[in-house]
Length: 441
Ligand SMILES: [Mn+2]
Image (cartoon, rainbow, N blue to C red; front, side):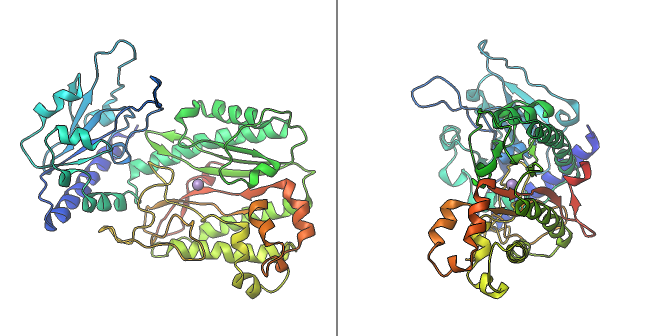
């Protein structure tokens, strides 16, 4: 691990947090320090079984420790403190792997319970950021000190732009996930079912399912038209023609988010042609990316190109103007062309116009677009155009003005193929954007 990149990352975070405090205090915040809480463990209702834990994003920004009841105390001008709560509990492994490259950036204070935290906090006005307001109240904090909106807006906004350390994690998370994608493709070609393809991915990445940044989507044939398809069918699948797999890896808290669509040679020729067009379309979109461009513009460009594809493949009839007026492309791609990516798969701040927290909603024609930011150098997001044959969306148009523009006999033939999505992770640069995914393919 590159310790110098991590120390620069912490220096940059320190700068961001100092400015966040200054701006918040200029508007009457009155805070001297920030206490970040990773979160608490939760259980299923009326059960002693724990729900898999995921630490709070802003905590993960400082430390690669995904454990409940860990704290970072930030005071401007001082080395940050990592309060490591390690209970005396013989039921579970309590060891925390403290690697020098990150641990040396903190004053580490080890506690055996959260109750001890209060006596170690400085006599300052602290802002608490985390999911447990009751814990903050038990430390004597007022409501106004818990998740102050002005502070979180600033920190959320800054998460979009990555340090070199973060880019290193994201690159590696892409490299490993592509090993999984190669194994998944091979398993599909050899006739594997959704369950087997899912396991092939995990195995090749050397990860457990709950170490993934999100639940893998492994969909054969018609199921690939279900955007967040959640099952893994175990029936024999030698006859399957299409695989859509959306799966990533996580490294030190940073996740990749990659989708590939594959077909067998016998798949419907129109669908196969659409797939190669979508592969080109996705990479063309990546070449448009530059600082200063609005992400909404990239989304609109994807819709424009998909409109052309629908005409070229005879899926829709009529002029491009007719199709655009009736928003035909949105029927085939009902999601946004991508989202911010980092610690969270759909990272925070996607709809923020500025660091003060003013928002910038997506265009009315595409309410599902998760990113409306203006591109900046080192911002990381996904680019994931899709084209699906979704019965729930299309069938209601059979007898509408929109429906008259659709070639229904071809759509009926293509329903069993499901859909296509091609997704890469991209970093904005002043020169050409860096494709964090394809460089490892
Ligand atoms: Mn995605």
